[in-house]
Amino acid sequence: MPAKEFAFKVKLSDEQAGEMGTYLDALPAEGVLFGLRFAYNRYTAASGGYLMPGRKSMVKRETHLLSAEQARWRLANWKTMIRTYREKGYSYPTISRIKKQLQKIAVKK
Image 1 (tube, rainbow, N blue to C red):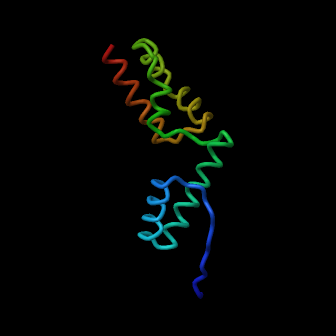
Image 2: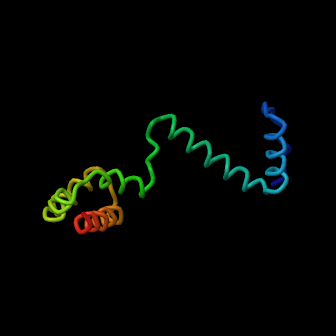
Image 3: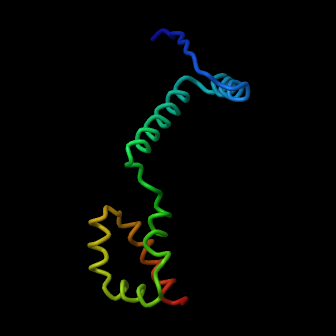
């Protein structure tokens, strides 16, 4: 497939223009397109409100305000908690990480 030249206009500061030039000179076209695809998909997910947070923040969100007593209760009723976490859409590895954190909280406090 013959290569095509593509010209576009973007308003950038001098610093941004230098950085953009560095990336365009250093990366092959496939790398630039991959980065643009990733940035576009991430931007649309963030602006659409459905960008999922990372696994670590999901674990923290579920465990950071729990008392030792609450952690022990969740561990004692673990099968129910698994069902609840699966309904929220958490994967089994994430649920396992939550359980490890609950065990630490139950022992520590």
